[in-house]
Amino acid sequence: MRILIVDDNPTSLQSLSVVLSDLGHDPAPFADPVRALEEALRTHYPLIITDIRMPRMDGITLLRKLKSTPHTETCDVVLITGHGDMETAVGALRHGAYDYLNKPINARELAAVVERSAEHQALLLENRDLRQNLDLRVREVADTLHRDLEEARTCLRQVFGIGSVVSESPATEQVMNDARMFHNDPSVPVLIEGETGTGKEIIARLIHFGEAGSMHPFVAINCAAIPHELFESELFGHEAGAYTGSRAGGSAGKLELAAEGTLFLDEVAEMPLSLQPKLLRVLEDRTYYRVGGLRKRDFRARVICAANRDLEELVERGLFRRDLYHRLKVGHLVIPPLRERREDIPALARLFLTRQAERKRKQFTSVSPQAMDILLRQPWPGNVRELENTIERAVLIHDAPTLRPEHLTFLTERQSAYSCAGVPKKLPLDLENLELPEAPLDLEALTTAIVQKALDRFEGNKSKAAAYLGISRFALHRRLQK
Image (tube, rainbow, N blue to C red):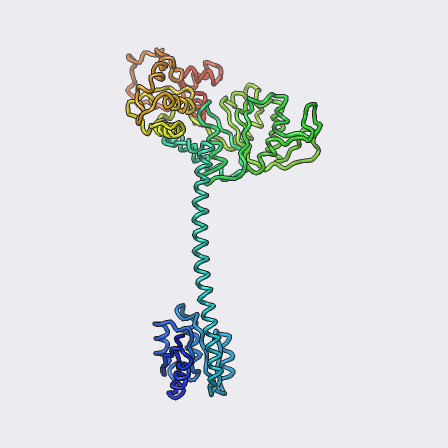
């Protein structure tokens, strides 16, 4: 073991060097403590033996400098003490000294101290290696877990269709931004409105899972698919014997199954009117009872609702409760139809083509400009769902590296059957002879006036006014909000 010896007494320095050499160690003697400190900073010495009383720098000062420097803080420092230095040496032990030797130095005591120091240094080295190996292993495990988590999140998005959200258009980007915002506050109920096939459930899943993913359940109910007489039991669950035909042991409802996740009520406009006050009470009190139950249960899930009918119009007609409508609308999203965000069509088409080609093991990897032009010119009354079904049909029938117009002949043959967004083939206005005034036009005011005239014509019926104007109910709704 390399041992640094510091003593201004040449005789003592020589004696220590000889004894340590005889013990099989490699001593480095220094009479000047300043030079000894410089040497210790250059070369690692596991053990440093130093006298206390020395000119230029005493042993206590040398000890403090060694212990305050990262390069030398782990070395063992043994102090050589005279009779008057005993109290100082004992105090130095509290500041990091390894041990002390009394003058005159006994060879056996010196050998014992050196041996203990060697064992101590060996333990420090072993601990350092173990710590480094542990840190390395922890980093490896952490990296592996991070990769597994990212793969799990990717699979999660693919399984639940979150990857189908494409935001090329500003309108879709705004919907996605709002969805991410709602994800951060599970206490806020969210109402998603949009035509059939616009991707309302995908947005609901995006609100639930967020970007990072969630391990909490996502429980979906299609309100239009449940018989009215079974709706309450399906939603709230029931106790044993609650009604004729109920399960013997009772059953948990969707409120209970959602736990701390999300309850998604699709086509919420079809919920029985008699059940709507009970849902409102759940949202207000965050508690509920099973059918036939006496024990109050806590409700902790987020509530997201979707509607393809104009809920506001249903409220005006008395077909949906106004108080529930406003409670569900705390968080509100309106997904525009695909014909109003055609910028999304190319990215969606490529996404669906890649997905269907992988599932059906076909060659398709791209869409030709001519085929894309056909897709862009379609009215897509079925929205994103219709686009996906169209791509799936083309991939099912054909197989080629690129989707071309001849693969979409079934689409072009039926194009004439569509009336794009309800626009009449011949406009009632004579646009060719239309004269504009000299003064600048306020297009926004003119549009607002036309919308108001249409509403007046149909006595406030938004569905009829939207059909007359050739736009969707939700486009009309956004116009009215402006």
